[in-house]
Image 1 (spheres, rainbow, N blue to C red):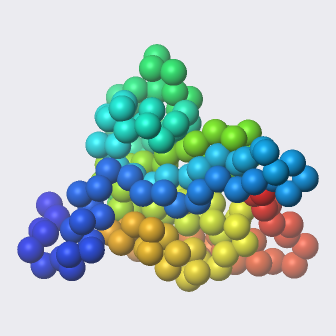
Image 2 (cartoon, helix red, strand yellow; image 1 turned 90 degrees about the horizontal axis):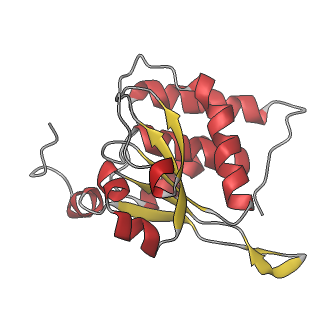
Amino acid sequence: MIRFDSLPPEVTQAMCTPMHLVLPPVSNPSNPTQYSGSLYLGSLSAVMDKDLLREHRITHLVHVLDVPWLPMAENEGFVGYKIAIADQDNEDLRPHLEAVCNYIDAALKSGKNVLVHCHQGVSRSAAVVIAYLIRNQAMTFDNAHSFLRRKRACIKPNSGFMKALQDWEAHWKRPGMTRRFTT
């Protein structure tokens, strides 16, 4: 259980906010009237709020939850992608990163808005968004983590995910690796 009495006010506020905008839409330089989608990070409460999702025109959901059920997805007009992983230090996030980054990138490039969420929007979903920022926005692990913390102050990927993200960064820094940039 998370205790709120010892948390800084900005962290408490972030945890009480269902979702935060991470990457706003960007116009295509070759076609200024065409925009990419927006990337959001949030909690399960954001996914359960259909009005909030519609207000922000979110069509794609990345569920980073180890539960036998999922919040609404296809039956409500949303496109869902699931990573069944628990928020535990010994869980290996690395096998999921390439596919989920491809999914997010394809949706954003087609102008769709994406919400990546876990239960609280603190560890699992934050780790996925950091991985995306490393690969697709050419950020270092430290820069991606700091950038995301400025967007959602309560992020805190567990130590196993942090190690996986540092390995992910090293993978993308290898000579000959081509970063995938979202425009």
